[in-house]
Image (cartoon, rainbow, N blue to C red; front, side, top):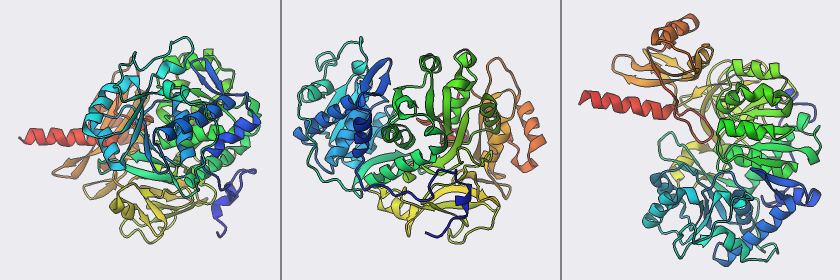
Length: 557
């Protein structure tokens, strides 16, 4: 690969190319189990398990799953929040060459049905709190094996659930009983190669129907190593004995799976498991730990934590080592606040289709506010014209990000049309529009599908969002393009006020007029108590847009 101009911005101890070991994903668990067998792998509401105990449980679960018919290539749905049961099943599936289908616990029956039918899932691992949706699912789709756990089964003092206490169907399995019934800790003799599929991640899909991105063992191992090596400048200063990671990002999502769970294995870090984002509960958890080496998060969560009344009291600034932000743009105000606290941070970009990674700001080196940074090692990134998608655009001009990399997925499961539409000659067409500056730093302008054309002008909502974030009374805000008979599309801002504040639409519009060209100023403002968000806290523009379209249709009737 010819020299990349962005390599000169890499931190001093980050390699420009990574020699990724040709191992399957489950071999990552062997690293901490061998080096630090007695170190805590999870702290789950105060209950701990060691890396060695995890290794033995994973092997027993792998052999237990094999005994009930899970084999290489079987699709196994993991429908769990962040709790010890998720990694136990995840690495057990990897040992068997089974393919993990990640399912958001908040999915409705319809969403679960789509994922189950699309993947031909034959095993489902789920938990007590979502059984009504699972029972409905099992009536509609034949899933031969259902394994159920109670989230609290791994919390000491909370009591153990049983098949009887959960009133399980007689043919279903109880997680603990299945695991306790197997004592075999030999490694399953299944050949798993780097090219084999490891997991399927359902990604929003701007078409509305979620698509399952297939990540191979090589994708996951590459992503884990690239993420760990990018963090070299600061993480390596904390010895492995003391390393911790706040595991708040859901493991069923690419970001949490790679940057938290698999990163923790490779880095021998203890995971502080957070199954749900409840701010006061989280602050109490943080108060119990002297240091958090690594905290990957999203801007909404970061804002809530650093502005919490307890932040100063628990000495948050001193506790946090490296803060990583992804999944949505980080407002400049927030970046300044984190710098003022003396916390290292980096902001990056990735997608489920790119193993959650791709482009990031160096940890020590040159960072640019508003930029997603520079490409990771072994990643080739180009910005191409929006019409044909072939010609590279000049510096400073908006183009679609396309990427060729060992991080790029194999394709979409059972969806050749979508695969062909996004993967061309090994290049992934991301649908994100960005510009590149004189240093090679990339700035996202918007999603190709979010861009709107109003009165003949191209408008990128993200630019308007940045201005709304600067308003002192707003907690969060998002701008959305909605159909307009006269202008083609018109811009509406949805705003959430900070507690105790009041404002009028005119006030917000006036503020935007001072900072934006007239055609970019929102024409309407709606105040809300909250905005719809994805599992990792990304505001869902599409949901707001669909609501507005539905309203328009209703008015016409």
